[in-house]
Amino acid sequence: MKTSSSTTAGSADPSLTWVESMGGPLIAVPVSVLDGWRGCTESGMVIGDGDVTDDYDRACEVDDLAGVIAVGEKGMRGLVLADEPATTCYLPEHQAFVRWLGADSEADLIAAAKTVLTDPTTQWEECGVWETDGPAVLMDSVTDGAELDIEYPNGGGLPEQAPVPIPPGRWTVRAVHASPNDDTSVGLVQLLPSEGDPFS
Image (cartoon, rainbow, N blue to C red; front, side, top):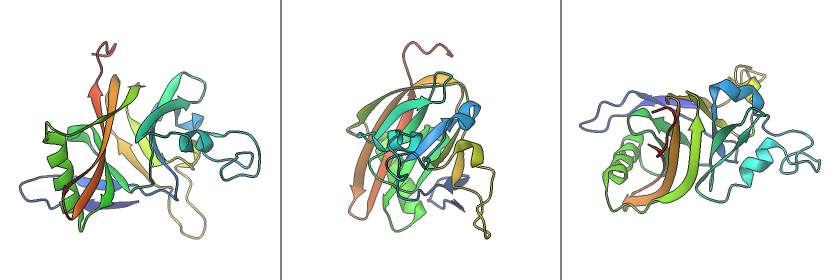
């Protein structure tokens, strides 16, 4: 997890927090149900030596660029950023997750992301509907949500995480991988207000 400031010309981006996974997918989990996300367990199948599907296993099963899966037992859902373990940040002004697929600098990546977001010819992939009750946290899906405030031993710092400041709502999820120029490739997962949103 690193925090840095974009210096894209003509922009005034606040400091961005980038989240990196240990090799699996990232997930955005509503703050209200963070303790319902268990991550990987010893009984899981992908990392553990068991035969029980744990939360991390379910996140790894998402085949599309993004997907929505259940979190806990309260009927809430998390948004999995799948396909590849790309370092990711959240742009609140566009309600979009920006995934670092290939760029010389953060400034180049963010500029490319904004180009794709504003291009009416972008070929988006629909990835379902995500309903939230308020802010979420972007994190490594391998991590237990109840342990985000527990530091790793030997000065390893806190688990990777970044705030996702979204209001309550029902969001249509769309995603794309794009290369707006020869030197930059970016992944995007954007949230758009869904029709029939009970919070609007």
